[in-house]
Length: 456
Image 1 (tube, rainbow, N blue to C red):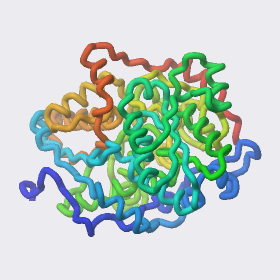
Image 2 (cartoon, rainbow, N blue to C red; image 1 turned 30 degrees about the vertical axis):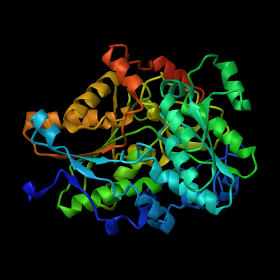
Image 3 (cartoon, one colour; image 1 turned 90 degrees about the vertical axis):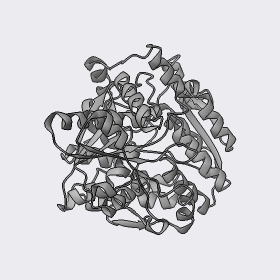
Image 4 (cartoon, one colour; image 1 turned 180 degrees about the horizontal axis):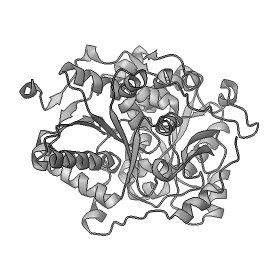
């Protein structure tokens, strides 16, 4: 059987998932509800209606339905780039001299360059179905903004993107792709919104954060008729849509009778990680199988490994609902590292609960080591990975080298969330020796924790 496993395992079109998997349905300890910061009470559908699309609110609050059918229009769009390949990293295994078997699920085979399109097309579909004029959003590395601009273009929706300023400046070509698809792109924080003006007054010259950009996008959505806000990570609805990654991965592995020992994903807000691990975590929760599941985050923004499990605002401007999650504090603005998509101060409530309950582990890695792993991978596997994805690559290589030392033949699966062709400024800084590894001090984090809202 070993020799029959191809380099790339593709599913047939008729083997694509027909429904998203709602991981929360199998969780005994459900994620804590979103809380209205004004009343201190759980957010209702009516509370969320001014911000989100109606159908997406229903998905956000649904904790009992295990499978939610994917509408035919979305399945038809998925067929343009799905199913995506599960790749056996034979060349990497040989270079490492490891007995480990390494597989990666490659999500970079679409113009957005990442997995983000899986949820973007779903959210745009529901916005169009509701009869909206357009949507607003934030983006860090630009992958989500690109994906959403593509989805909105497909459904003839207006798209307003607030891009974290440091990424806006580092990645001008990513910005131009968004504009090509018709989106307006504004560096955040900006002077266009009240919350942006406030943040700039308090932090002159700030490079911005996802929390800042979220605040601006929400303000614009709630003050312009016919608009709603959409988010590319963190929310339960996003993890639901991204479950197509894990469902396809598991189907491809099952096709060849392969059972992974460990599943590794990069973690910023949780979209990729939550999607990749969903069906495997479901088996784990139901007691049907066991896997070692590892979340990998940047040492400069270590919400899992150094954050606290508490209610916090999802945005810097403190206008969004409170979520119980692993957080560094909504006012925490991370160092301007090059993994823009992993610079959110908190983590998905679903993943936070699973981590808190011991169903997964987390590791934080510095960016110079991440880029060394990215370069090593690119030279032998032929794909230039995104900085975000390279966090998972780094730990996958670490684990494969441990197998080399012990002689264990473990099977490792990781998520290659996207390509890094718009991240060449980052690669340039790494090659020129100008990249540093800023890691927040305990004192900085404690100062941020002290400002957390008081919620029982």
